[in-house]
Each structure stands twice: as structure tokens, then as C-alpha cells.
Image 1: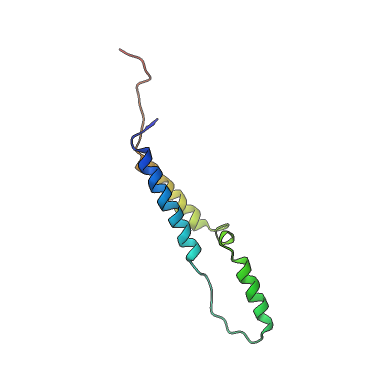
Image 2: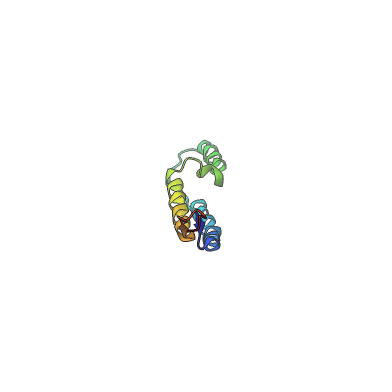
Length: 90
């Protein structure tokens, strides 16, 4: 198997994969809640500490599916070709 344009796929991957991950880091998943006591603020601060950037992408199936689709698109962009000639000359 050979590639027609492998460097185009490498450049596209270098731009698109970090961009996709950056979009997931910037996405906030917070709900507005009414707090009746300041004792609950301690729990809120702990929640903020747990939401480190790499903690959020651990169990995200949607992100894994999007990365898989991006990988398939990048492989198609690289232009794989199958050479049927095995080197035998007629």
C-alpha cells in the first residue's frame, strides 16, 4: 500500500486533532444550583478541582467517536492506493 499525499494528511492532523481536543476542553458542563448553606461551597470547590482538563475526556464516548471519524477522514485525505503489481515484469 502506498500513499499519494501523506504530508497533507499529516498537516491536517496536526491542525484538526488539537483543535477538536481544545473544543472539548473549553466546553463547560455546569448547572446553576441554589445553595442554601455555605457548607455546600466546599463540595463545589472539590467539583472544580476534579474537572481538570484530562479528567473530562476519560469517559467521553462522543469524543472517541469523533476522533475515530477524524482519523478515517485523514486516512482518506492521504490517498491510499493499492499496488496490484508485485514486481514481476511481463
